[in-house]
Length: 301
Image (cartoon, rainbow, N blue to C red; front, side):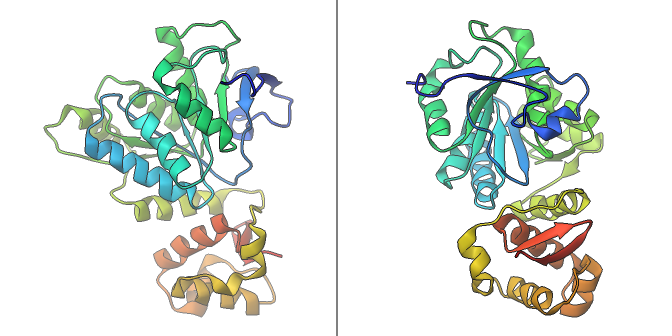
């Protein structure tokens, strides 16, 4: 089933080696890859417990799907529970997703997710590991794997994390790597949220909706130094067809401007609230209508 997708070894000097991962301490010198690492301005990991509730899995799927619709690549570990539903959510939106395994890529763990792995590859995503063929899935390797899940992502979203869980390790590693950690809270008596609540107490960002995530992610995009150009040619040629009224207003302001504008410039010109402008700029960036460089925004050319 997977043989039609050969395993490629990539080192840190290879152009396909994830750029963000290079910035992390203790990153692997070599990675093994089936499929491809998609080209996108933003990678976000979604993690959580294997013993997830129905509500938790539905939340993971919904968040992954809505992010994937905005060209965000979803990263997770192909495990049971939250991981699998995050991958499925991205695929349901015809988006891209990457699964990071704790074993060699000649086999899929858990075995019941072989079909999901195949769908990831067929949809233009990738399956990644630091372990060569023939390496079994040993317990300590799952913890090592987590630094890759967070390391290739600009942010990590935690959904249902017990106190002693791999997702807590992923979140802590993400924080150590200087990445944002977003956590959904839950009932205070439910063991699936005890770790989640501890992360919030320790400084992770509490989020309760997709809109919260987009607002916070907008800050990540503004802080990145490289120009973001992930452009859909149809949208690029017809930017005024953007459906949202506030988005249309922002596009018109940027089209009329002779120079790139800052968030404050756009707020002043549109008379929209700052958080509204930031949210719509994020949507417009991810959809390819506009570009950003050094915190200044302009129409994609």
